[in-house]
Image (cartoon, rainbow, N blue to C red):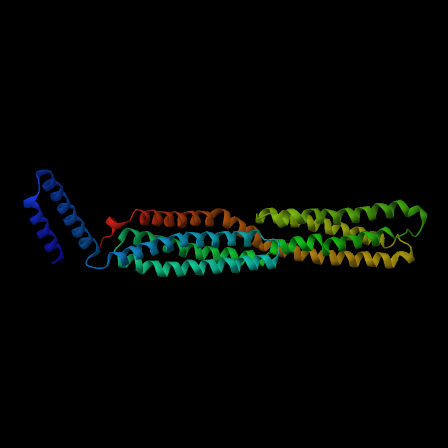
Length: 315
C-alpha cells in the first residue's frame, strides 16, 4: 500500500513536470523500487536491523575468540617456562580459564552464524573447532608435564642438598691425618682422588638434567658409576692409613658420600622423566604448528565476517 501510494504520487507529478524533472523522478522511482526489493529479499521478511545486530555480535565474538585463544596459548607457554611450581600451576590455571572463554564464545557464535545462513563462516568456525580439539589434547599433555617440573626439581637438588653433601664429604676428608708421617703423601693422594671423583659426578649432573637423549644420559650415568667406585675405593684404601683419631672423620666422609649418592640417584630419576624438556619441545614443535593453524582459521573467519554488510546478508 505504501509503495503503491508513493508510485501513484510520483505519476501525478510526472504529468505536470518538465522533461528533466520527469527524468529525475524516473530515477528516484527506480532507486526506491530496487532499495525496497533488496531489503525485502535480503532480510527474508525479517527485521534488517536485527540481522545487522547479529552480524555485529558475530564479529565481536570472532574477535574475542582470537584474543582468548591467544591468551590461552601465551599462558600455557609461560607455564612451560616458569621457574617455580607455584608459577607453573598459576599459569596453567590461567590457560584453562582462557580456554573456557574460547569454548563459550564458540558455543555462542555457532548458532548465530547458522541463523544468518552464513555457510562459509560456519565452515571456518567448524574448522577452528576441529583444530581446537587437537590443541586441547596436546596442551593438556604439555601442561601436565610442565607442572611436574622434574628437571627443575633435579636442578634444585643438584645445586642445593647435593652440593652440601659433596662439601660435607670434602670437609670430613680434609681433617684426616695419617697414622705415620711416612704415609702422609699417600693419604693426601687418596683424599684428592676421592674429592675429584665426587666433583666429576657433580659436573655431570647439569648436562644430564638438560639432555633429552636416552643414550647420552645412559653414558653419563655409567661415568658417574665409575667415579663413585673410584671414590669408594679411595675411602677403603684410606682406612688402614689414617690415625685412630681420624677414623670418625673417615666414617663421616663415608656417610657424606652415601648421602651424596642417594641424592644423585634422585637427581637422575627426576632428570630421566624430563618433563620440562619434553614440555618445551612439544610447545616449540607440534604445539606451535597447531596454534598457527587455529589462528589462521580465526583470522579467515574474521575476514569473512568483515566483508559482510547490508548487501551481504543472505540465506
